[in-house]
Amino acid sequence: MRAVCLAVVAALLGILQPALAGAPPEPEGYRLENYRAPTPATLNGAKVIDTNEAKTLWQQQAAIFVDVLPQPPRPANLPPDTLWRVPPRNSIPGAIWLPNVGFGEIADETNTYFQHGLETATGGDHARPLVFFCERNCWMSWNAAKRAMTYGYSAVSWYPEGTEGWKEADLPLEKVEKAP
Image 1 (cartoon, rainbow, N blue to C red):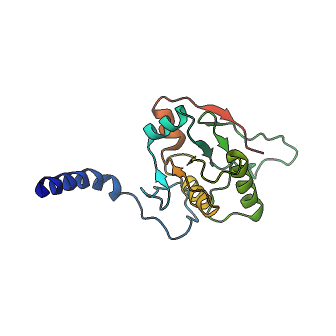
Image 2: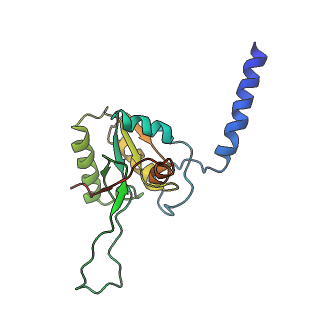
């Protein structure tokens, strides 16, 4: 019996090892640069979910989906008197968009905005399930999920495939506006 168990564990490790081999390790703190790069396979204290798990949570309305993709800045070379509109963000239907909260270092104003956005979305219930995402290979959602745990949120999930994985699974996307 023990030999069978060891064989099963060895087989599972053989399957998982290639997937984990290319993933960088978790940093001690937040990722501070190169946000569009391969992300870890883990996030200590959070549950890492795939598209099927995200879809189930979404269909059952069992979690609040939090999109943290940054809002594009106004182009620097745009003349000051030119009207500029933020490009639309297509996201998971029903998600709240809290842009710019996933940088490694955030201003006090952004920190307050993030905390207020989560408090509003959860009704102050820090045990309410949250799913953080942006796009694949984007550290913004990893940082934001980690930061939410420091605020005391206990049911944090991280969906590293983000809107790209969602779209590839032929799941719907809808235009979202930045949360106030």
